[in-house]
Every structure is written in structure tokens, then in C-alpha cells.
Image (cartoon, rainbow, N blue to C red; front, side, top):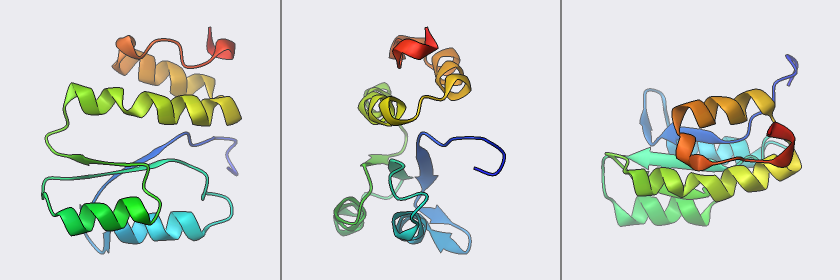
Length: 110
């Protein structure tokens, strides 16, 4: 935020050195500045209790790796919701370059 950048979504792996994706999720949701940013967690481990805990405590989605195209399609509603709050031209167009089928994310990015 000090650099004038806005974050539309945080995508993190569950297993990271020094901190789990769940730990990161808790820190984000406890932060007044970050708590409204959608969080998606990914893992190669299909552990239902872990997935449930993340979703119950604020993760917007939980993807199992390898990530499928259908998973990427699930990101669009979270981006649309966030972009309606804070449109970020650069991020939107980076996403469109990465995944052109996502379509236009908001009217001001046209």
C-alpha cells in the first residue's frame, strides 16, 4: 500500500517453510488492512480436515494441486468482487494476458 499497489487476491501454498498457508490466512484475516482481500490456498495433500479448517476460517477457496482449468475459472468471481471494490488496471491486464478466457474484469479496465 505504501507503494500505491493494491492487492486483488492472495494465492498461497499450504506448505511453506516457517509458516503454513493456514497461519498466513489467520494473519491476513486479523489485519485491518488485509482482511477483505480474498485468499485462496493450494495444496497437493488432500486432507479434508485441513481444507475445512481453512475454509471455515476465511479462505475463499482451497485448490488441490495440480490446479485444473476449472479451478482457475473459480477465481473469476473473487476477482470480480474485489475489482468492484478496488479496480487495479495493471493486475487485471496481467491476469488477462495469463488467462485471456477470463474476459473483462471490470468496465474501467476496458
